[in-house]
Amino acid sequence: MPPTGRLLGSGRTADVYEIDGAWVLRRDRDGRGNAAAEGAVMEYVRGYGYPVPRVRLGGDSRTDLVMERLPGPTMLQAYAAGSLGPQEAGSVLAGLLGALHAIPGRRSASTRVLHLDLHPDNVILTPDGPRVIDWANAEEGDPGLDWGMSAVILAQVAVGDEPVAQPARAMLTALLADPSALTETGLLEARRRRAANPTMSRREVELLGPAEHLIRSLVS
Figure (cartoon, rainbow, N blue to C red):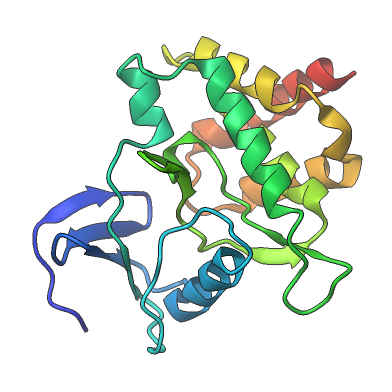
């Protein structure tokens, strides 16, 4: 287990600690993930030129993942600072999904690697371009599910009553400017998975119906 320094940030299920100027440690709090498998997926897509942090492989930890420390804000932080517009954010997300789904699956060329949690807080804007983090939910399957997950995540925010609702709607609209990759099956499965996600609050689950309605209104 690598020694940890100061806490750099926390999400719903994990904390990120400083190791040194080049590396950080992402540690799951609940142990439900598989950090070693997650790192292997990241290295696989990085081998195809996909923008992810480098990782240190070789362990079999379910909780600890050592990865490259990236300079720059998340896409969400950049929006809050006024340096990134919501339409641009949505377009970047769409480009990242499209690029990911051009990579063949690790187990079958008929499937694709899916991130399944690609949203503005999981993209870091480095001086060299965006980098995608948090691959804990990654699996292989049909790209329509990945598009559905990103759309539902943004739509849940867009139909809420927080100040970021309108920007989230603009991001969603830009994400779905070309809705051809979003499938009916993918959208329904994304809603089902979000409803079953134990990190969702009751209010977030209640917003899934209006979120699906909003998505359908944008692609009809």
